[in-house]
Amino acid sequence: MDLKEKTIVITGAAQGLGAEMAREIAQQGANLALVDLDKSKLDETVRACSSAGVRAEGYAVDVTNESAVETLFASVKSDFRSVDGLINNAGITNDGLLVKGKNGKVSKKMALPDFRKVIDVDMVAVFLCGREAAVQMIEGGHGGAIINISSISRAGNIGQSNYTAAKAGVAAMTVTWAKELARYGIRAAGIAPGFCETRMVSAIPSDIQDRITATIPARRFGALMRSRARHVSFWKTIISMGAFWKLMVAFGSDGHRVFLSFFLTIRADHFKGGGSGGH
Image 1 (spheres, rainbow, N blue to C red):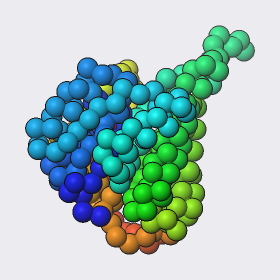
Image 2: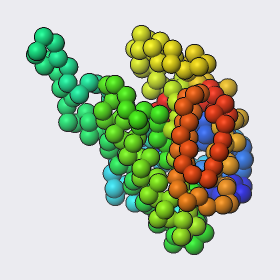
Image 3: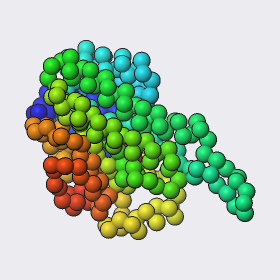
């Protein structure tokens, strides 16, 4: 798929990795349907992409709402005439221990609403947007590509029962979609970013940040500005790759942990200093 004049939908596009991807993909000539609830920052991304000479439209939509997502993709189809690619990037964290105890007494439990909120944004929204993008691609008869953002935390991370469950679900769901949708000319791939200098990561307490960076060979978080060129080249490759993959490929970009499923080999240092750590 040549990205020029193709329509790519990006969720969570107001800031962080989503905004950076949008700006760089605009440079490749793709038109962009950008989705986020933060309309003010979303408008900034839309203006930045439009300055590259492509069409960019913003949609302030709650991607956890089924009817809103259905309306969103119908609107994108009407506005742009096609949906050629989707990057499921929207995500949040709401960290906390499953239970917190001391001296045989439990002082705090993770509340069900706190668990469900992250599951809704980080996994249910991926399902809804992926489903509706697939509907538009199949009915349009042209296939396309769906990229889901998972996380290195999908393997489990202390204090993130909700986030890790969601990101593991996204990884598994992507494998399923790759198997189901290939017959329609739709490719599905997953990216598992490491920790980066984003709003979400900056909210982590400094002492925990120090413990995280101690496990990364580069001893620092990825910087979006430094990694932009590498990553947009990579994203373009994923979106435009002509061959079909039998199974999903999940890439870990924390600088030293890389998981690959079948048929693709890539060097870990290609991703050093990249990722979003959760957008």
